[in-house]
Image (cartoon, rainbow, N blue to C red; front, side):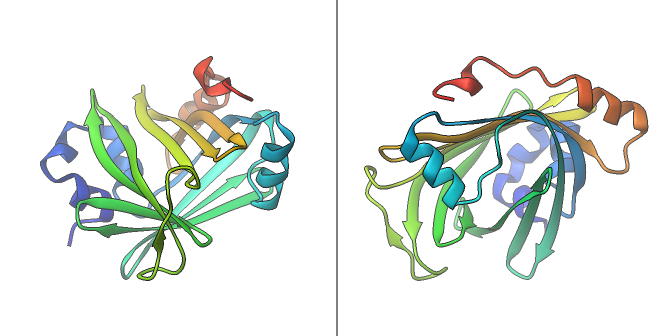
Length: 200
C-alpha cells in the first residue's frame, strides 16, 4: 500500500520536487530551524497559550518525526522543548489532520514542485463523529512545502475565528540522515517572508 501522501496525490505525486517527496513519503525524520510568530491580540495570545502552540522565536530548533499508523500517520513536531502532535488520515480524496478534537480537512495539490494544502472544511469531535464547524467558528490553516536545494522550506499559518492569527512558522528542514553541510544550511538559510509575519 502506498503511504498516505502518495496515495492522496496519485499521479500528481510525481510532480513534487524530490526533497518534498522524501519528507512526505512516510516515516520521515527531519530537523531544521524556524522563525515562529504569534498573533498580537490578547485573544490570540491566550488561545495560542491554551493550545500550547509554539512560542514566538527568531531561530528555534525544530525536529520532525512521522510515525506511520494502521490508518494514517502521526506527526510529532518539536519546536525547542514544545511538542506539537497531530494525527493525519485519508478520507476520500482529502487529507484530515486532527489536533485535539478539531479536524482540518485539506485538498492537496502540486504547484511547481511544491506541496500546497488547501483547507476545505473543519469538524469538531471524535474521529468518525465530528460535527461540521460553520466558517465563522472554524480555524483556518494555510500550508506550503517547497524544495530549497536539498532541503524543504515549510510555511504554515494557523488562524482562529475572531482572534485572527494564532501562530505562523517558517523555515527549512533537512532529513535527519542528510549530511552536516545540509543541516548547516538549514540553520542559516531560512529567510522568513513578509507574508508570514502578517498579524504577528
